[in-house]
Image (cartoon, rainbow, N blue to C red; front, side):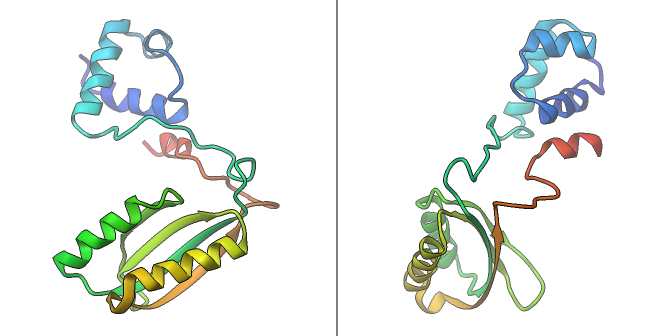
Length: 159
């Protein structure tokens, strides 16, 4: 297997993961079994975590993307609770640690309306209790002018 093949394959999958191994083999100038082995290796090594789509969130009924940063205690018990809470809420699409602005956590979540977002925030505060301190939110309107829509395909150009 060519040394650069895994990176070339990853670049092509970022552009369009729907393509077949046969199509990718033709583009990259190798055999279909070579592509299948390379894709399997990328998955097994954890380079590719999942194959998914980036839908049109508005057509799915979402109006808002909330970016919520907050200060939290970082004990093991709180981290376990955070994992359980975030994984139980399908509208949370990312949660992680951050630094800066006096905050150490961030949540990205999708909401069908402002009312939906407000209820979500109330639940988060109730569940977090004293473990979650001051927070800030930015709300992104998903309808209207979006100069660069969410897509991972842009990363293919940087590789």
